[in-house]
Length: 286
Image 1 (cartoon, rainbow, N blue to C red):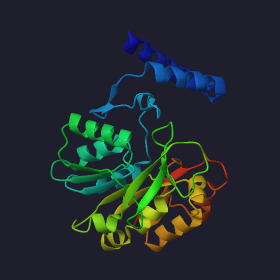
Image 2: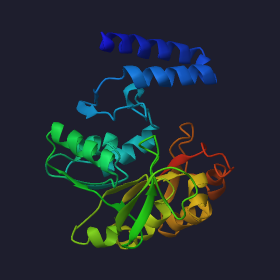
Image 3: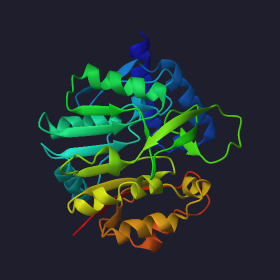
Image 4: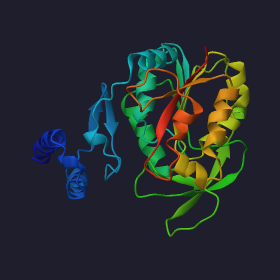
């Protein structure tokens, strides 16, 4: 019965969204509450069985397929082709990890980094349930040096983040970090690097300089969240300049109407103080 009610709720939510009703706060809160109460234990996504956290705090159960511009989708598909090696930093529960594992096949490799216990356990469960043998899960955070850091835990499993100084009442855990250059030093090539590190992305890139320099065809998919970068004392422009200095052309993935490369000014428009204003950057070399 619960499954039937959830299907009705999901269809109704889609209809309401089409009428623009979903923009109202009361509707959003009601929808989130219902999703929390009614969501299933797992969903089938792109042919993979995907187990959710107990509150489905990211609302994976309500996710719809996202259509990327054809040129961007083609670049990602090529980078994740059969036999390739992919690094997933901030793997969370494995939403992208499972897809990567499917794309690269048995002859490919996926390295998935996720430091928080609850997330990591579900990540491993999702990998094992789908019988992927080409994924290595690593319970570490990724940085530009090997050290111990403090991670602040959020009620939303995708929002755990490394902090420099505790300024809230949220619980924290101590986490060990690694550098990609050190951890993956024996890998012959890396084809695709995805980074979603909640504002710590700049430091992840700094710790992967050798990999990026030695792999001329590497494609990088990285979150650009100016609000969180500022909290980590990183000027957002520095992240953009680091990527450009590596020789990458940048594409604003969230701006689906724009199939042309983005300039520094285009990307910095997200730096307006709004914590919800962010995007993902696809970085390729010509």
